[in-house]
Length: 436
Length: 141
Image 1 (cartoon, rainbow over the protein chains, first blue to last red):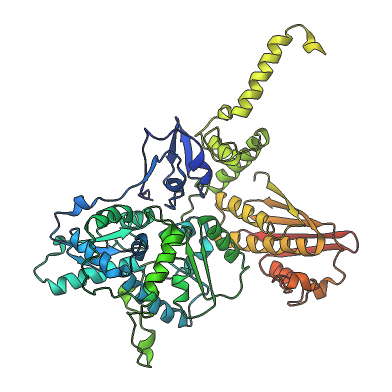
Image 2 (image 1 turned 90 degrees about the vertical axis):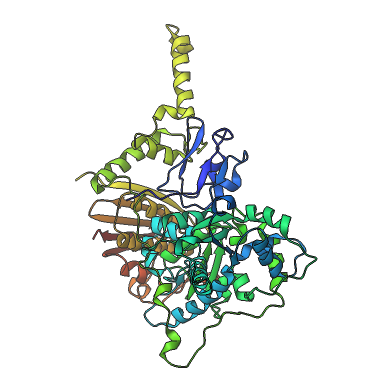
């Protein structure tokens, strides 16, 4: 199995080796080694928690800079709807779209347009009889990776329709070829403007048997500052936005669900909540639902680690922007026959996520049993206070590291202190019978 | 074959929100041991239902899980009121859960039937006024 390429990097100069990220990592992927945080790529799900919580700003999302794509002949910006919620006193999305052209892009294709198509196809998909319910949204790449690492029995419940970013990239490239037949494929750069590092990883790794249609990912925060310099509110921008309420709504939790036009849904956000919900689904302990929308970030995509504004403020602004928009500007037309359930092949995943048993202690089951027994023995000797001083997030994770040969039991400061006390007591005692 | 691994959990009877925690813990252990996904799911559902039952009817109890390479044994022991009529309790939809608990969405009368459905063997030892011990087995496929 090739190691997954992640998009969180560490500034070694800034990292003090404190235990903040260690404690917040939902998959126990981080250890402190030689005074710095180290991420285990097999366990990381790109949720961005460590970037958000680092008090020293040592964790960074890696993404491309606009300058690195400047030389392409035809650069297409794919703004995530979250971008629209970053600006104060903005009453028209077209200012932003014009701003993207002014900062150097040659065309813009809104991801929210594709989101409306995905919503329309999701409604069709949910009507199919052979579909296993509840269907779990596939839009947040963190959730997909989390399911494949931790919830093997839910892999086949994932919505097999590509996320809006992918569909937008596909359509944007088609549009470029149609309008500019002189362009060669390598002249075009489809660039997603992302709220989160997880999308960077998704693009770098490809997904579910497909290579991503996106060529580059840059962060909303970078684009935000570039746009502030070029956006001119004195000039009325040309009306080019083709997004409705549904498309913009995808930026925050509940937006995707409400677009299924059916109240049998659950929408949750925040990685801990999401894990809890997935556990409950696996245990069969949820009401009869058709659709589950899960977002790793608080508030949904507006809470992404590469966004600028607070997620709830961004959400409030999007509400204002949505107010006078039509419900959707990207409908599928129903003919009243079987074509009404048709979904283009190109919109489907090649394959569903598969279980990646990285949690397994060893490749062999009997070896795993032995290791688990050893972990239990070590646990009996550990203080079980999860202080993090050893560099592992919990005593249990530390015991696992010891069994894997990645740590020594003497790395536990509490155990060490005990041993020192014993040695001191022996030295003091020497012949005095310990005073008893 | 090596000795069975033993995991012990205390199921807190006063706390609905923590019910299901043991099930989540066991799931994690079974994943680490490389158990097949289907086995993990069966154990997890059976445990979850059992935990909820102990919280609703018996004020909590103990959950012990013994994991062998070829089978998993779950022992749920409580000191609750006991089950007066096991046959009736095994019927789908039969429930003695009080209205307050049903209003929370529990007590649909599917607990025991589900535990039976998702395990390969289930034994109920119950004594009125003393408590109930349920032993379930799931064979590793």
